[in-house]
Image (cartoon, rainbow, N blue to C red; front, side, top):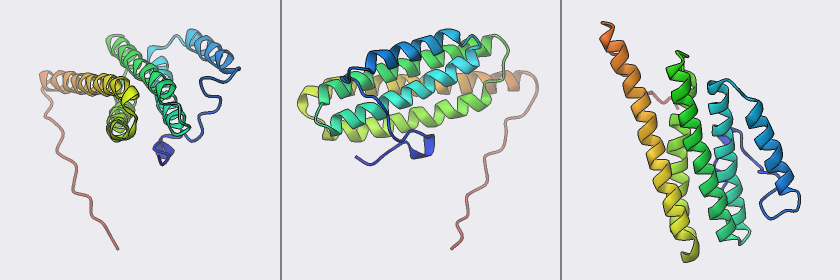
Length: 173
C-alpha cells in the first residue's frame, strides 16, 4: 500500500502493536490525553491518534499481520468517534469549531477511502473488522455533517444568508 497520510503528516507509525515497548507508548498516549482539558485540543489529539492508528494498521497488514492490523484500525476509528464527541463538547461550550471540523471532515473522508480500498485487499479473516471500521467511519462522516448542518442552521436563524458556493478550480498548464 502507498503511504496514504503524507498530506496529514503521518509517515512512519513508529513502534507498532506486538513490539515489547508498545504498552509504554500506549501509556504515554493515555497520559497525554489525560492532561488535555480543552475539548477542542482533545478533539485534535484524538484525530491525530485515529490517523496514527489507521496508518499503523496499514503497516501491520503489509507486514502480514492482518488480524493485528484490523484490531489497530478499529481502535483508531474509536479515537475518531471520541474526537467527534469532544468537538460536540467544544461546540456546546461556545467555542469556534470550524477549523477543527474541517480537519475532521477531510480525515473521515480519507479514512473511508483508505478503508474501502483496504477491504478489497485484506484476507477474509480481517474483512469483518475492516467492514466494522468502515461503518464507524461512515458514522463519523454523518456526525461531521450534522455538526456542519447545525452550524449552518444557527447562522440562518440569525438572519444571515448561506455562503455562496466556492468558485470552480481552474487548472493552469
